[in-house]
Amino acid sequence: MSEKSPKLRAELDGIPTYKPGKPAAAGGPVAFKLSSNENPYPPLPGVLESAVAAAGHFNRYPDMMCTGLVNELAERFGVPAEHIATGTGSVGVAQSLIQSTAGPGDEVIYAWRSFEAYPIIVQISGATSVQVPLAEGDVHDLDAMFEAITERTRLIFVCNPNNPTGTAVRRAELERFLDRVPSDILIVIDEAYKEFVRDVEVPDGIELYRSRPNVAVLRTFSKAYGLAGLRVGFAVAHEPVAAALRKTAVPFGVSQLAQDAAVASLRAEDELMGRVGALVGERARVYGALLAQGWTVVPETQANFVWMRLGERTSDFAAACEKAGVVVRPFAGEGLRVTIGEPEANDLFLHTAESFF
Ligand code: PMP
Image 1 (cartoon, rainbow, N blue to C red):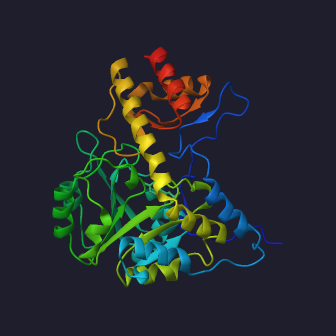
Image 2 (cartoon, rainbow, N blue to C red):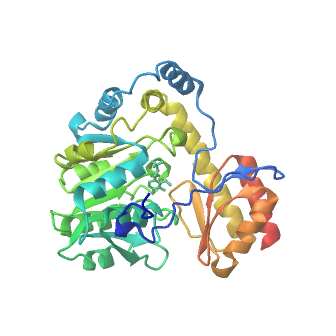
Image 3 (cartoon, rainbow, N blue to C red):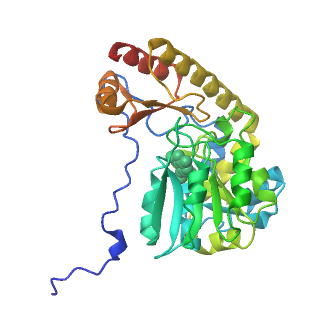
């Protein structure tokens, strides 16, 4: 038998393993998970019922084209069904967007710090990441991102609101950027947290996409819709981008459970958006309480989390939270991202923060 291992692509060397938010501490005092920006509410009974009904048929492959879900989304957004491409979470769709546009020798621009999956999925493709530091106040520096464009640029991510800072780019600034970027570069507006935005100056990416063939919008059912465990996300994009996404998607990547639960969630939207409203209320409460305690918190978060720049204190604060029974997301030496959860979880976090200050 040969001693040699199979040849793997050199581009994979050094790719960090994706680190999901820690699970709630097993056996801990109380275990609240505020580390992955999930929705703390359990599935609505009607949504659960539709998934359970679909589960009765999982000896069959799902509808590969996600027809029912795609039609429902097309109607709701007033876009052609051909402009919607679904995938295994929006991260799956993001990976397909890169695979459709960039490979070795090409460049993908995004702000940093931003969503941790971007560097990983770019590196997997063999393309090169061009990370543009966030400007003062942890906001996207769109001028610097424009300056970073070269002949090799194929795709630009704008994470709006940005994970993990919660900051959002406003309409006038984003439109100016979109109109300056050469039209053969794909701009992906990642709106995973769109439903939590309350600043009316923050645009709806789907409005921006309509007149711009080089803009794609990423959305997910994982956050506001509470289906993180079912893995379903989608892009809205013009042909031929949407067609390329359908070609590069993992075949049958969205289970029938996920498709049916997503449709049921869209139909239960009033109730789900009521929950989002409650979380937005909790966000204001947590933010205000942290300020009152004397912490510096990045203002005006538009997502379902807050971002605290703690520098060297980050890891110790995260450890204190964990000890108290709340798992949060530290970025060592930089800051802490804390998901807005159920009121009891937020209270426990605030209590820990007060003792740690
Ligand atoms: N985009 C952003 C900005 C995110 O924060 C996340 C999840 N953390 C995703 C995309 C991916 O979410 P999902 O794959 O669950 O749709």
